[in-house]
Structure formats: C-alpha cells, structure tokens
Length: 496
Ligand SMILES: *Cc1c(COP(=O)(O)O)cnc(C)c1O
Image 1: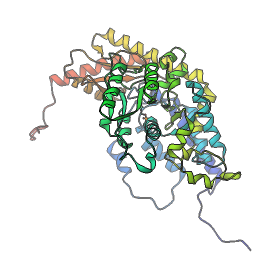
Image 2 (image 1 turned 120 degrees about the vertical axis):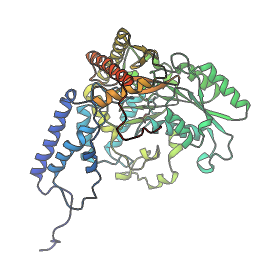
Image 3 (image 1 turned 90 degrees about the vertical axis):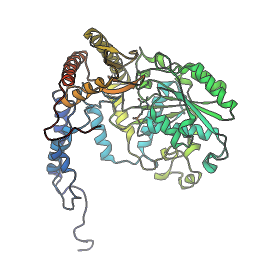
Image 4 (image 1 turned 135 degrees about the horizontal axis):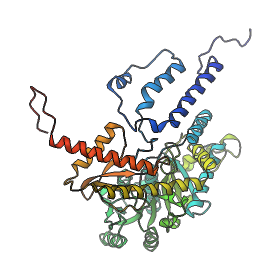
C-alpha cells in the first residue's frame, strides 16, 4: 500500500475513549478536592516514604494515565502549599479559583506560545494590558507584559528605567556612565534589592529610605538622599514606591513621589504586587492616588485576584521606552507583512522570554466570569476579616498588635515575649498541627507573627477558630518551655 510507513511513535492517546474517561475522572477528583478544602489540614509535610518515591530513576517504559493520576492523588495533592485553605495566612499568597483551573487546562490544551507571531493569544494579552491601563488611569496605548511575578516585573521595570537613563547602555554597559542610584523604602520587597544587583546597579546603590510609623516611605528623607547623591556626583535614575508592603500593607505617598520624580526627572515605578489591585475596591482606591502618574507598575494577578500561579504583570506608560529596552532591531526583519509571522511588536520584544505560555487566558477567564467588582468585593472583605482578627487578638489579652492594621495584614506577637522567639514557636506549632498557617516576619528586629488575609474563602468565623488555635498553641509552647523534653538517654546534648 503506498504511504504505509508502518507504526509511528506518537504521544496522543491510543484509546481516546479511555483518555476521556480518565481525564474526566481526574478533573472530578480535583473539583472534589477544592469543594472539600476546608476539611483538609491546612498543610502537612510529605512523610519520608512519600519523598522517597521522588528519588526513583527516569522512567523509560510507558505508564497508565489512570495510575499516574492515582499517584498524584496519593503522593502530591495532600502535600501542597496549603494556600487554597481558608486558614492559610502565610506570606501573601493567592488562593486560586476553580474557574482559573479550568482556564489553565484549556490554555494547556491550546499550548500556545505567546512569545510572538500572529495569533489570538497576543490579542488577549493586549486586552489585559488595556484593562490594566484602564484600572490605573494609564494611557490606552501603554505597554503591558505578563511575567512570572512582581519580582520579574520589578526587574524589567528597572531595566527599562536604566535604558531610559543611560545612553546606549545596551551596547556599552554601565562602565562609562556615572554610578546610578535608585530609591525605595526600607519596607520595600527584597526583590527590588535583587533587581538592583541583577541590573548592575549594585544593592548599595538602591537607597532604602526610612519609613514612618505606618511603614510608608518618608518622602522628605527621599528628597535629602537624592540631593546627597547628586552632590556626590552619582546619577539618581529611579524611585520605586510600594503600594502595599508585605509587612504591614502600607502605602507610600504615591502622589508625593510622583511630584518629586517629575521635578527630579526620575523614573517613577510602583511595586504594587498585591496592593495595586485595591484599584478594584471602591473603599480602598484612594490609597493609590498618584499611581496614575507612574512610569511603570508591577503587580500580580496571582495574589489578590486569585488567578492561578503564575501571573505577574508589568505595565509601562511609554510603550516605546519599553520596547527600546528589549527589542532586537534585527528581529523586525523576520516579521512578515501578513500570515503567521506578522505583527509589529511581539511580547518577546518587551522582556527576556522568547517562549512563553498563555498566562493571559486564565486572567481573561477570571475577569470575565467574576467581573472586576466581585474581585474588588473579595479584596474589601479580606480587609474586614483582618480588622476582625485584630479585635479578637486585642480581646484575648494574650497578644499585642505590632503594626497598624492598614489593610489585610495583621502583625502581632505574644505580650511580654522578650526577643520574639516564642512567636516563632507558636507559628511552628500551628503549622505542624495543620490547623492554621500564618508566617513570621521581623519587625523592629524582632520576630512577630504575620497573618496576611488574602484568601477569598476566609471568613470572620475562621478568625475565631484561628484565635482559639493561637491560644492553645501558646499554652503548649509555654508548657514545653517549663518542661523541656529530656535529652535522649545515653546522648550528650550538643551545644548549638
Ligand atoms: C509578593 C510581592 C513581591 C514579589 O512578587 P512575586 O510575584 O512573588 O514575584 C514584590 N513586592 C511585593 C510588595 C509583594 O507583596
């Protein structure tokens, strides 16, 4: 028979009917998991026997999809981060949504490469950029790009600012330029420090400006630092304001920063990883006053908007400045006037990645299904829950609040706790029991407990459960202090 080349290896199902059954079963099980998430422990560590399964060698023989799904259910699903659970309050994590899961599955089905070329994925991403511009009062033709997260978006923003500040820095590097300096508050996220390192500015040249009692940058100190650096012959080029600090949810005075940056001819960037999404919440929007005059904004759809990880975003007011930082002029030669290789600006001209997934789709689904107002209402709700927790903690008499509760983050500690070591132990106890998962952070040099209420599932009632759990953790930790476990017999306790 002509054209009969015999059997060919391929990766599609041998039996589509069976594949359909198994994949529907997997989806149903995941939906059950999400529906029953409250009944699960917040977190549990994977036992040694489970971890050992992940040390086996590369499989060469085919396995059965159903069996691998069973393995996933037994070995992976129970030992995940915990951020789906309403009593997860660690760091600032998004909780995801079932809708986002479906969108992510559809995106994987399309397997689009959103680095470039002429396909609908790029139009969806451009729409998200326009929605973001609308949200923050940016011009409609601002430039936007999905990235992994705000860490990456902050770095890209610094590179755009650097490119705008130093003539031909892409070709010549920084050697001939005066030393650049950038500014952020002492409460800014550490990824800005890392960005300064990676961008060749050097972490010492990211000046960390002191904050006020609320945790906001003291703008007058910023003006002094800029003047000092100019006098010393350095070249200030960028200010990174924070909208929502991780420690206390504090907002820098963005309006004041915008004015100062305009006067000083500095690039004004805003790290709004989660706080920028206050733009969705009518009662919180005013805190962002001035963000509409920023040159760039970094934020995450995967935090307060609960788009599944990862979905960071960079918005740049001056689209040309953005493109000039990353695009390769030669790349335009390969662009066609039509067909699949058409298009003027591709996402790969706006960042570091050539191949990139379809992050826009899950974001598009999230906004289409819930609407911006509902997401904003969930954001407002988390702030109400945080205030309820604050009230309960004060009522308990055991705890003191360690930073003003300005938003959705409550930092607190055991009263009369000395160096704060007990705070850490309380958190360890709660994690180990899988009851609740706050994290710790350091405030004024002392470890404190931090509950960041981000999850749309968390209720005021959960905070009452959390408070009871905290009180019993305190009792256990104090009891263990009074009666430390005896060293094992025959062993000399080691000095630590
Ligand atoms: C979470 C966060 C970041 C880092 O964002 P990733 O998405 O984790 O990279 C930066 N800044 C602030 C204020 C954050 O809350």
